[in-house]
Image (cartoon, rainbow, N blue to C red):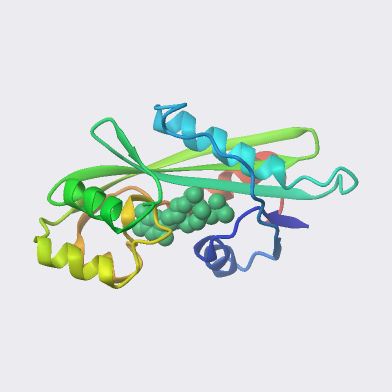
Length: 188
Ligand SMILES: Cc1cn([C@H]2C[C@H](O)[C@@H](COP(=O)(O)OP(=O)(O)OP(=O)(O)O)O2)c(=O)[nH]c1=O
């Protein structure tokens, strides 16, 4: 049985999209912050592993547990989920008119073994006016999204170009997960 160690509705939706049977088991584990680890690839890898291992139940040894973590990286800065509207404004103002990277780490815990991988996608955002940013923040969509936007939502009209996996940006790089599951000999 696959366990999704996540509260993200996006991750659930993406797993359903590939007809995967799973159960959600979100945890409240302490994550590593960008202040502790400023390498984006390392940060999402470690947090994906932390989330997956936190969901392990010792007696259920045959479970396979999936954890994931998504962040936005722009010019040496790492943006997670904005804590309030001001931080959302700061992130969107900086991302406006530029190309940034979205990193998602995925980890599969299978008994004693841990398999992991990291996907990265370049996303180019249009130049946004202050009015556009404020009206977008008012929609509430930035809340709970790394980098304060959702490519799959209202922010889709702000996206000029992407290079890499779209599903990675939404929170779960599906082709990367497929390859990792094959490596781990797990059926999705
Ligand atoms: C950039 C971007 C991020 N996101 C979301 C995906 C993730 O849910 C979220 C990043 O936060 P995460 O900390 O990766 O995940 P989460 O807190 O939502 O869920 P959990 O830790 O329980 O697994 O940002 C989008 O939905 N669309 C986007 O375009």
